[in-house]
Length: 125
Image 1 (cartoon, helix red, strand yellow):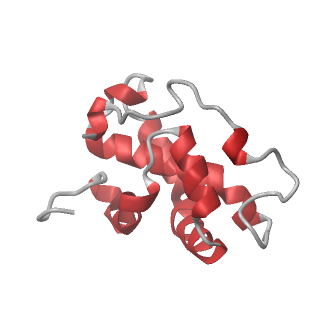
Image 2 (cartoon, rainbow, N blue to C red):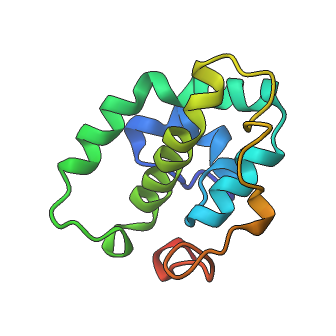
């Protein structure tokens, strides 16, 4: 974070330590992060963000419109971090020893199509 500029809306500034690594704008990146993170790291992230997920959802639902690409940058980062949390909560919540199911379809065989892959949205730059 540069200077005192918030990366998230003011009411969520306590979650800013998680922004750099966990606010990921695309499904392919979120899956990659979940699979590459250690279980301890994943549990710490989920433990910090998930208790506030209803508050985050209510905040985002209060913003007019329904296009994530039209959100202000701080709101978009919050939106992306909430998605990462929701997509990462299952291994943490169920106490899995790994961040994936051993006999699931291999992640490296998945193909992501737009909008589930990069480039980064304009309101994230």
